[in-house]
Image (cartoon, rainbow, N blue to C red; front, side):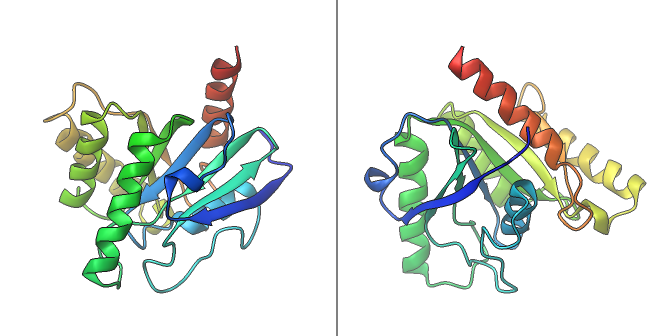
Length: 200
């Protein structure tokens, strides 16, 4: 898939105010500072579509972007470690939960994982929640340019071993680097295939 147009649609904290559209949606979410905004900008070929920041927790609303006039990319707030108040975190959690529970247009969630670290309990718990609520998701390993190939392979294997203690099989996953601009084509091809299935 080639992205020809990527337009900002709306930011809000209420699922009821999300676009009233039947178009398929793909949500991107991960721990704060996982490189989500950089990945979104790489995917869309736009330098500042999603706001990047040295400070974790820049995304604080549900952000909808219309891609190629036929699907929505949804940028959700990161979870954990964001330098915001506890009350703000509760608000984020509330509307993130509402989004996943109520948004019928959601086809798949992409959970971003920092490839440099061992499996984090906060990520595992979030994926467990998605599974319990029957929400389809894939993993995206980010910042892979920071590791040597064998280190990356070892870290992903560690993740697989950890997940297989709970899951019957490892979810579909992608290996990406926004700096090296790798992995984006695989994600877009995956989305294109799902879009084709939805419209058939």
